[in-house]
Length: 43
Image 1 (cartoon, rainbow, N blue to C red):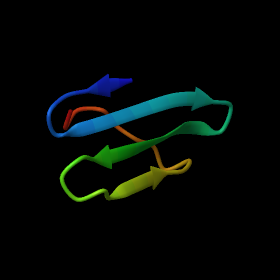
Image 2: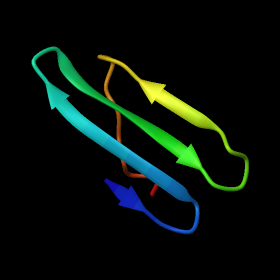
Image 3: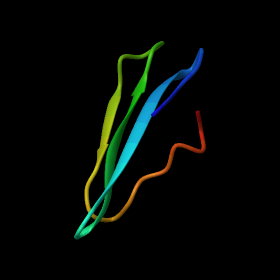
């Protein structure tokens, strides 16, 4: 999991790929990533 002034993101590896989410503090937007993968690079 990564967190900074922009928001937070987390990824987990499963048997079917990487899943996770991103949350942006300023907008309250939540993005959920399924088996297509995810990244914590923007945080």
